[in-house]
Length: 157
Image 1 (cartoon, one colour):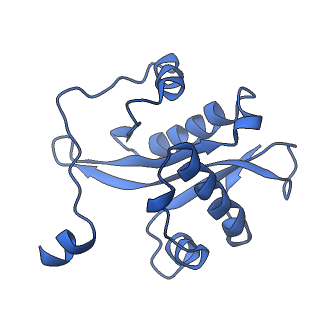
Image 2 (cartoon, rainbow, N blue to C red):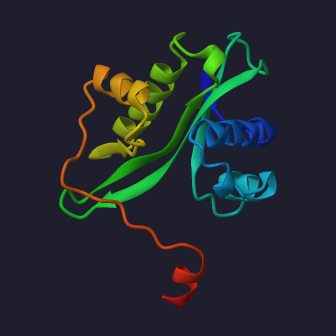
Image 3 (cartoon, helix red, strand yellow):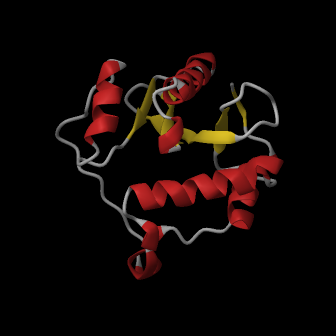
């Protein structure tokens, strides 16, 4: 069962984010709090949205995966897009369709909102994820490199 996240889901989503950080070997970068997450998903100015996957098919059941996304904009298309920041399903609950259904649900939202594209990044070593995305006919965007400013570099800009 896939559904929009609710404020009561924040602790579970935050725990899944920690599990994702462990999986990606990026635990040192996982410094956000559940309070930050709640404010940015459900505060007066939401910055992102999330969907959750439950394993038992019942509302209120255990959350085993999530997709967190936000709008971006294509000046070339003159249309909004959706950027998938994170898609994660607990390893013991994979291969049951949760990831595919989360992606389908975000794709449906993108179509309903008139988005011109739906995109995300994947770590180059994550072969299982790359194979999964290719099975959905997603294509890598060659020729682009992600740049990022954080911490002191962002403060000094």
